[in-house]
Image 1 (spheres, rainbow, N blue to C red):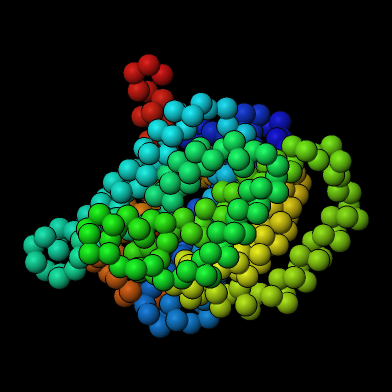
Image 2 (image 1 turned 180 degrees about the vertical axis):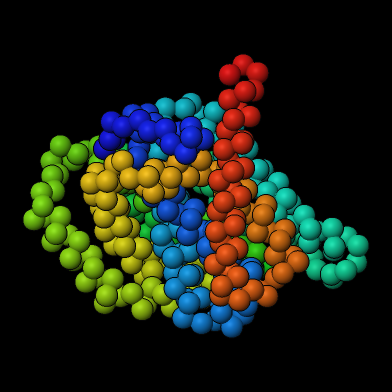
Length: 360
């Protein structure tokens, strides 16, 4: 539901018009990108003993289920309602996939230069073709565009396909390593256990499919589901109990990055229940506090999630080459706020440049 609210804040630097936006979706995306930034700081800047501590495990959890799965599920939700024609959608997926490769080059630029100079003896292609979330998003758009007629049959079809993909992740966890340079870096886009395959299609296409299924379910039953105060309390209590009972399991999975990146059907089912309560909770938060400045800022981040994602990786990726895993807890927290400030300023400036571009 869209709250009819138009806000202009921070001396006009940040604009958010929810009359043209899905405010809950933007809030979820904004939270996801904040969680991604903090986990990237933990992974690449914090000392190894912090990464291995309880603090690191909690950081990895928040950088796990509330981050990439949310982002991809929201993308699938909007893909399901997209009116773009076949060719436009396909080209969008291709451009996003290629953009992911360019971002890999940009965020690893400092490292790639040092490899070229002979300072590090590393395979540069594993960094150039690392399967990060933009490559997954591009490939997801391509694949879902190709099978759109199939997944639009009934909301159970994309749900079934998502379960099938995560089941396959358990069934074939190891892909053969090919000698062909093309296959060596193409196959990890779809699956396998290579350490540069962070978000392969198997199992991660399951999340856009999940969002697609939810959109179809919502369209079918939106006039039949109403949550009064009693139902809201019961749902949130049940969700809280679910987190209390299963939270340790989820933290253990999220804190083990190879397992998280290539998780199977059990963790996927856990994420379905987690996201159900998570969505419901923040839908209610947004409806109760639609004018909150903090929520406004987070929704603005969600509205500009691609720009924010690119800027934070360009900053963290290149800085980490200089200070990889050397920062204390206090310094890591300071780095997080410094990166958030930098990406906010850069996103504001980028939006102003876009608005001034010829033809706008």
